[in-house]
Length: 427
Ligand code: IMP
View 1 (cartoon, rainbow, N blue to C red):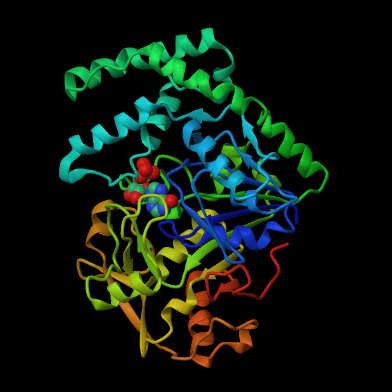
View 2 (tube, rainbow, N blue to C red):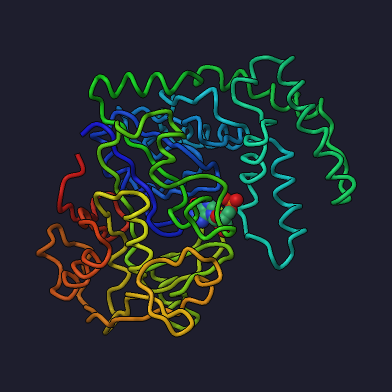
C-alpha cells in the first residue's frame, strides 16, 4: 500500500497531526501538498508537545523524509524559525526536502492579506493573516515568486518588480499604505537563500521514484474538505485544494498512484473564521466542547466555533475525496453527555435535504435535523480495542460510520500518541 492521502473531512483541526504521527514509523515520506503556515498540527510525543505550522508532521519521526511539495506556499522566515525551534529541542531536521516550484509568501503578501481583510469589513473571511490567499492569487496570476528564484538574484529582482508594480499602486491608492521597496524585499529574500539551498530539490521526480521503489508515501493535507477553494463553503474557504485531488497537483503524482484516502473526522464539529456552520452551538454545550476539547487554534490562538457531529458533511467528504477510511478523533471529549445529538439531514425552507446543498444561499439557511444517540460516562482514554469501549460509545461510532459512508479504521481516545484504537491497518 505505497501511497496514502490523509486529509481533514470537516473544516480543519480534526487532529490530523496525531493520525500522521501514528503512521510515521511505517512511512518513508510525509508530503505536504497545499496550504502554508495557516495550518496547525499539534503532535504529542511522550511528554513533549509540538505545534507545527508549515513542516510536515513526519519531521518528528526518525527515518521518515518530510517533503514540502510544489503546491505549498512557503514563508521562508516562518520555515527557518520552525526548523531552528525543533533543532533546539533535539529534533533532526536535516532530511527535509522542499520543492523548488513551491511559491514563497513574502512580506507584501502578508500585508495584502491583512489590508484586504480590513477593507472587507463585516464581509471578511476571517483569514489567518498569514498571506495565504494573496500568494495563491499571485501564483494563478503568474506573478508569483518561487523557491528556486531565491538562487538567481537577477530573476528574483525582475519578478519582485513585476509583482510590486501593481501592488504598490493598490496599496498606496486604495488602502492608503506606503509603497513597498523592491530592494527591501529582494534583500530580505536573498538573506534566506543560503539557509534553504540544501533542502531544495525536484520533489516530483523524487516522489515518483520512491513510489516506483514501493516506498510508503503519505500525503498530508492541511485545513479540511469544507475549506477547499472548489469544494468548500466558498467564499469562506482557504485558497488551495485540501481535497484528495490536491495531493496529485500539489505533489506531482498521478491519481492512479494513490491507493488509499483517509479522512480525519472529529467526533463533533469545529470551525475557525467566518462562514456557515449548521450545527454550531451557542449554548453551554458548545462551551463545554470548546473547553474539554481544547478548541483553540494552534496557529491563531482564536477560539474555535463548536457544534455537534454533522453526518451530511461527513458523507460529502466521502464523496468528493473518494474516502476509503475514516480516522475518528476526540471521541473521549464526548464522554459525560447523557445523550448526544447527531445531525442526519438539513431542513432548508421546509424541505428535508440529506446531501450538502451546492447552492450557497441554501447552505446558509440549512437547519440541522438531529437524531439523539445515547451517551456514556465511563473514562475511555485507556481503551485499546474497540470492544474496550462502553456499549453506547461503540454504538455512536457505528452510527457515524453508517451515516458517513466509509469504515472507521481508527479512533482517537486521548491526545497522546498511544491513545488510539486501531481497527483496520492503514498500510
Ligand atoms: P486563510 O487560509 O488564512 O486564507 O484563511 C481562510 C479560512 O480558512 C479562514 O476561515 C481560516 O480560519 C480558515 N483556516 C485556514 N487554515 C486553517 C486550519 O488549519 N484550520 C482551520 N481553519 C483554517
